[in-house]
Structures are given as C-alpha cells and as structure tokens.
Image (cartoon, rainbow, N blue to C red; front, side, top):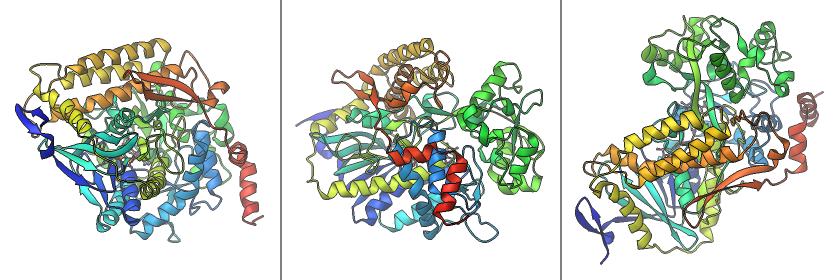
Length: 624
Ligand code: FAD
C-alpha cells in the first residue's frame, strides 16, 4: 500500500477525502462566480473553491465601475466605440475576437446583473448612471459610488448560492490532475486544518486573478500569488503577454505600511488633477501624439469637458494608465515629486466637500483612517503601484479553453482582452463576459466527454511536494525567499526595464528557484501561514520568471511594458505575442508566436477616426 509521510505519520492516499463534481471553478471573484452560475444554470454539478472567505476577492475591492456601452450618460456610445477604445488602450495587441466579444456583450451582462438585483447609481431619468474613466471616450462606467465591486459580488453570490453551487471556502487549489492529456480533477488543501481534499471532475475553470504579490509595492492582497498561472503552466497550458503588468499610476505612497494601496481612478474621473511639487499640472506636457486629438490641452477646455460639454476634449489626467504612471515617475526623477516620492492628486480644490464624500466615500474613509488626511481639504500623495496582469493563461476566445482539454481560464487569470494595457473598468466587464463564456465552454466540453480516470500517483506527488516542506529537517524560510523575490521584481522587472536589468532579474529568479528546493516551514499543518506561503512560492516564481523572460524578449516599449533600451512601439512587434510553456526538461520555454490576422471589419472599426466612427454610428441608428 502506498503511503506518504505527513507530519511524521504515514498516511494512506485512499484516506484522503474525494469529492465529485462535473466542474470545479477555482476562484470566487466575479469571473469565477459568473462562470459557476453559468455551469450550474445549465445543469452541471458545480463546485466553487476559494482560498479565502467567499466574498473576499479583488472584485469586491473594485471601486470605479464596470465599463459597458449602455449609452445612458452619453447616447453616442456604441459597442464599436468601446471596442475601438479598448484596442487603442491595449496598443492594438489585444486578441481581436476577445475584444469584440467583450465590447458587444458587456451591456447585456450589466443589465443581467440589474435583473439579478444589483442596485447601480441612477441618472436623473432613472437609468443606470455611468462615469468617466481614463481612455474611455464617453462616460461608460456603471457604478455604485466607489463600491461597485461589492455590489457585483453581492449580486453574483446571492444568485449563485441560491442556484445550488457548492462552495468550498478557505480551501487552496494546489495542482491539477489529468487523465492522459485531459483534465480529471484537482488536489486542494483546507487552510484551517491543513487536510487535503481531492476533487474529481471533467473540467476545471481557473479564475484565480493575478499575481501582484511578486512585487513589493502593489495594490494586490495576500491571495494574489499567481496560482492559476502556476497550475495551468504545470498542467501543460501556455501563458501569454506576461510582460504586460499594469502599474496603476495612483497608489498611496504614505505612510509606508499602506504603500501601494489603490487610489481609484474615479478620483480623476470626478475631476481630480495631478500636480508636482512646483504646483504644475504636468500631464499637459505628457500627451502622446496618438491621443492628442482627443485630449484637452488647456485647463479651460478640461473644465468644459468635466461640466459636460460634449464638444470639449478630455482632461489629460484621464489618459491611459501607462501614460500617467510614466509621467509621475518622470516628475519624481526630475526632482519635482512629492515629499514621499510621488505626485499630488488634488480633488479638494476642484469639488465641494459634500460632493467628494458622496461620490468617493471609500477614498475619503481610506485616507482618513490610513493616512490621517482629509481629502476634502488636502491633496493626496500618490505613485505607481503594481495592479493588474494583462497577460495570463492563453485561451480560445469563444470558449475560454486552454490547449489542455477540459482546462479553462477567465477573468484576470486569462490573457487576451486587454493587450498591452487595460482600461479602467474593463476588468469588471471582462470577468462578467468571459466568466459566462468559460461557463458555456465548460458545459459544451463536458457534454461530449467521458468521465476521466483519476491517477493516484499524480495526487500523491502533489501531496508529497506540499508535505515535504513541513517534513524536511531544516531549510530556507519562505518569508525570506518571498521578500527577496519582491525586492528583485520591484527593482529589476518594474515600471522601466532594460536588457541588463531583466537579465539580472532572470538570474535572480533562478537563484531563488534553488532556494525554493529546500524551503522549510516550521510548525504543524493547522493554521500555518508559513506553510501556505511556502506552497504559494512555486506559483510566484513561475509568474515572476514568465514576466521577466517575456519582458526581455519583447524589444520595444508598448503599453505597460517600457524598455528604455528600446523606446517606442515597433511595428514588427505588433505581429507577435510572447508565449511561455514548460519544456519536458522542466525549464521554461519563451517564444515569439505570430498573432492571428484581424478580421477586416474589426480592423476597419479600430482604425476609424472618432469623427468617422461617430458618423457611422449616427447613420446606423438613422439619426442625422
Ligand atoms: P478576483 O476577483 O481577483 O478573484 C480571484 C479569486 O481566486 C479569489 O476568490 C481568490 O481567493 C481565489 N484564489 C486565488 N488563488 C487560489 C487558489 N490557489 N485556490 C483557491 N482560490 C484561489 N477593475 C475594474 O474594472 N474596475 C475597477 O473599478 C477596479 N478597481 C480595483 C480596485 C482594486 C483595489 C483592485 C485590487 C483591483 C481593481 N480592479 C478594478 C481590477 C479588478 O478588480 C480585478 O482585476 C478583477 O476583480 C479580477 O477578478 P477575477 O474574478 O478575475 O479575480
């Protein structure tokens, strides 16, 4: 009988609890919940597994809103304009089909949420209200104050739980099980007791969000260790566009304990301006040529736009995140930064205290509690913070399936919709649209698939890899390895990159892989955060290596990926994605892969001038 050692005791694999479902959804943010609802709605037995408590996911932290061309606040909006904005924001590297599905289906997904009970802020005429955000041509973000994610999660949870989805909370997915090349299940671990559980299923949908915890300054919380990327990679799926890590321009920079905490773009959407230590509104000097025709170049015009003048152009603070983050960094480097190395974000002088408290209640509260600062009276200090992964698991656009049969990915865990840079508000819409697509994809797949067999050897290997961390006599501290990794990623794979920095970064990650081989967690299996940290390290290292390798290969600057040794976008690079996968010898393969040519119609829409597109939309609607 085959046994493995677990805290000094020999345990029989057959004693590990096994649970059967048609599909397991890993991650209970918006993407996971929406995917699970779809599966369960279509009659599948659906298990939803999440690392923390149900409801505690990044989706719940989303403040600004969900982007959808409902046209409630500006009736010129249309899916084609949303699609064009998304492609331009993504510097045309987006998967064309995914960006099309996203823009077309987002309005239906938002209306569906409303039908399921979400209460959005309203316009004066009672429609869902929409606000401005960077890179969006019109006010497009449906919102609930600055607590949109909370309302979305509340609605999806209610819907899902009442539909009979079975939830496994505080349960960490470790690795996937396969029957030949197909998915057969997953091994997971209860965080509280350290006991293992085996899920038997025909399909797994990964919806584990991003991996921001590889960096030191990040808006991400503890769960975001790139687990979905690591698990997919180990199971034979590909990662794509990993070099495109978004540094949100406005994270808190002071006090140090909360450095990186997000300051929503909603502050700029509501009229907040960025100034340097010399009180200059420096974004006027940072307007890229591509965006010049749509960006105000005087304060007066920016004000007119904020007052609702449809002919005026947008304030430069609402340029895409990559542009604003680089501009703040430039000011700091030039010695014009704020006292703690950022810039000033001022809403106090632009809006009344009453307005600020009404429109941005969480921000008011956040600064009051964490920084003892009243944003209705003083400017905030802000600077770039690692926020979001545009890249992720490579999937088919329509089904969200990876190249591993039965393995799906959606939401931030998957690559494609956002290309080289994501627009604010496009993540919530992505996870609703792609969550549903992944659910339908899994339903179709399961219908035509026989029940796979479980392979005990694979399960034993996964469990042993986890228990070895506790059982070895001595070894490296998981906390120290993590700290070294965060320092390395912050300094070498940060907002500005060079070949030299990235090569050093890759070497550094390879050294940390060696330390990881002997990582040791002290204590017992119950309530053991050191053990959990050690387990997450593998995924953090895969994520970090993938980002560094992809960033070194892409010899251009595009969107969120800035190479000072290869400035500017290079046309030849528009033809490639960088794709990463695991070689048979266990090393990481990183290669340039030709992108599929766009359909003629989508290419035409994306390249129209805004005036041409607006005229086309008017004509289509018969308005002239
Ligand atoms: P998440 O919501 O991140 O959920 C991931 C889930 O996976 C969690 O349940 C987690 O516990 C689980 N998980 C991870 N690993 C494991 C594992 N090994 N085992 C089990 N479970 C696991 N986007 C917008 O569009 N608009 C906004 O206004 C906005 N504001 C934001 C504000 C903040 C502070 C942050 C951090 C992000 C914001 N974003 C916003 C981005 C957006 O919230 C996220 O990209 C999005 O919510 C990701 O959703 P998701 O469903 O893919 O994953």
